[in-house]
Image (cartoon, rainbow, N blue to C red; front, side, top):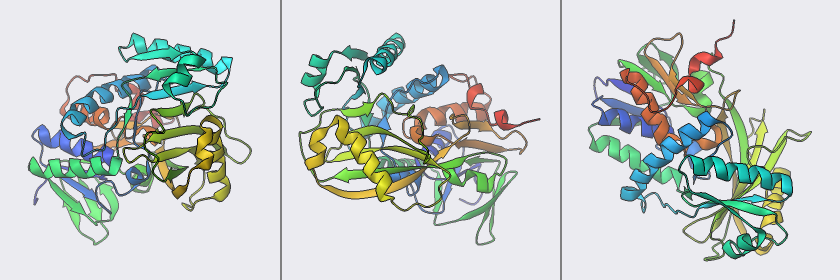
Length: 370
């Protein structure tokens, strides 16, 4: 494409979704990435589609996006390796159970099917869980996908709609309506969308997106042994210890019969190598809920760097001081869930149209300090 109207920097699931949405609206889009579609953070993630409700604005974005995911998986579910397994938010004590009950009420009030399970009902719903749990909230519409496959599919959709891609092109700088490549080449467009994840701050130093490291592991194949995604009620709330590590179990059933295991958070660590002590903590957390995992074979482990923001919210909208520069980044562990909602919100903002949800909580301008 000689003269793109929009350049989208970053072909992870968020950037690819933004590119397709903009192209479908009549913009001529060029999607640029130093690797390829889904080759960065997207390749390392768990791929959950889950309604999180730590704040009303977080739930707004999740629900907007999840309903768009329903449309996508209706046509592309097999390609995305989609499984609507539902999520069990597991409570280990009465305090967690009270938080779980409040979550069920909030989700149900917003039309997202959630019900509370007693210990007996929980044991029947997911026999792999250990006995003695306080109960759970079951969120039936939740599911999982394989994120790199979705990013690749979106890149194919983009070209089918008349857009273009440029992969294997490291980017060294962002200007007003232009992108500078490592080769020295300059690409011009009317607008630039930066969906570069952890690389955002290197390109735009005034946008504070930083890497938050996580460890994951996957087992051999054990078909039929896990029915739901199982998540501790401490997920996203677990406090970091003295070593800066926060761990809360998240275990997914994959279509292959494998179990995908997370989750942890570490800040301030640039080393992407697997840390055996951290991996052991993640596995112990999962085994504490699902004891038979201790007898399974873990065949691979890896890490990923989630792009996080200081207030835990994504960064979506116009750059406050750089004309014709837009952002879609900082989603941390919700990039997959919120990819389509982010694309819709950003495209509406770029078009100057009314948005489906309030965009202010995500505005890049919130990082401007006096």
